[in-house]
Length: 220
Image (cartoon, rainbow, N blue to C red; front, side, top):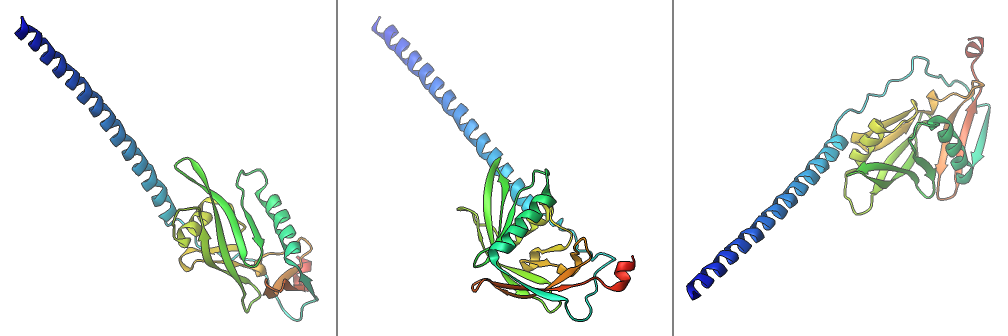
């Protein structure tokens, strides 16, 4: 009788151990499956960021030709420039669903979002602006703030060029970690165009030379 009771206890113990192991195996495989999914999604995101689909910048056939002396020069403050940029981007982006901001403080800053594992991640890209000899503006990327993540600046610039709607006169040079603003290809409705003369963000001094349309442009 005692032996039978002992056998029953052993059988129950083995059964219990099997159930525990079965549960452990289930949780083990579920955990491994979750890790596999997360790794797969992460690799997909990183691959997408690194994919070299950045289109080559093509100058418009009707590039503007600045000749002679400027008609006049305007001096602006950062707040005024920021209001102009906000207005332009709101009109340009419209209801596309794409939202980003570009504004001036002590540095030029691009603020935007990208999706990582189904979550929106915000980033700040900081630039140092330089006036080129032709009156265009070079924005050289200096640093990137993206929470606790560490991503190369060139990958974020490539993402901006591939996934965000940007004006035709803005050239993304991800390999050089730079952006070029081709002001010589941005023309106002009345035919006037501008060249940047000076950008001093610390002293809040921004100057642009304004040119009137050429006579042959008026005839067109």
